[in-house]
Amino acid sequence: MTESILMAIAGGALIGLSASALLLLNGRVSGICGIVDGLLIRWTSDTPWRATFVVGLLVGGGLLMAVAPEVIQEPATRSLPLVGGAGLLVGVGTRLANGCTSGHGVCGLSRRSMRSLVATLSFMATGFITASLFGLLQGGA
Image (cartoon, rainbow, N blue to C red):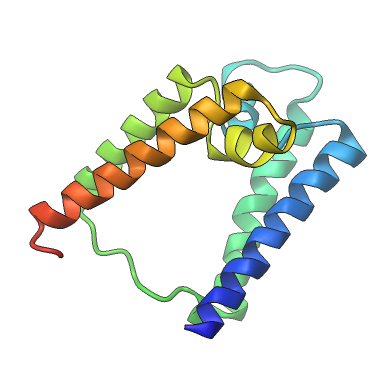
């Protein structure tokens, strides 16, 4: 229990530090959806940093798995269609909210954005309800 709490605190601190560093050093908000959207939709002068950011995320995750695979506590057991459908719904939601959890929840709230507060409350409430319903439908408590 204590180890998982410490890992959560460390992870949150690292997310906050990295978002702050990107904003302070590059003047960019680390909203992952906006970064990927700008990378996929149109080629502009800031495409190279967007590509570097996304590659860094993927390489960082791969390095973590190679160095410390024990940090992944539970393997994914969901079906590919379920995960794909969930990903599609998340994509639609981020379009409707003009941002995602990293853009609104991490960066927007720290900048005291009312729009980000409303978006974060909306997607957190929806996530809690969805997770609870899926748990009940699949025989969970």
